[in-house]
Image: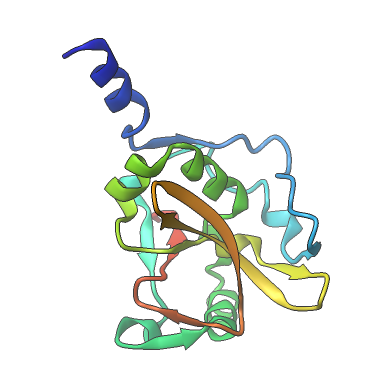
Length: 157
């Protein structure tokens, strides 16, 4: 195997992701409040993306759910702590489009542990999606519809 291909396989497509949990991530300026600040440093420092659960609300399986329904379900069932958050999404984004396509092709994936209140008083959740040749990290209002290709990312039990 040539050196360039070996580096590509070793780095971009390696399924093990490392997250620095020693400090909280820097949030965008529009964020007024991080709703679950105590959960920001909770989670493994490394994980295998092949073992990440693509969790869907029951309404998402064959249709759509409103983000507030998903959020309430995750809170009620005490599943929020097991979700990925903003810091996890940032690290996945840094791995690049090849990595994202390999493990999350056709999906917009959400980090529900990092729901925030914006300066206009609306709740938002961070997510990753394929934007051309880049992995985009954006924020979605919880008043929006979420479909079957919009799973929450959760650590395997």
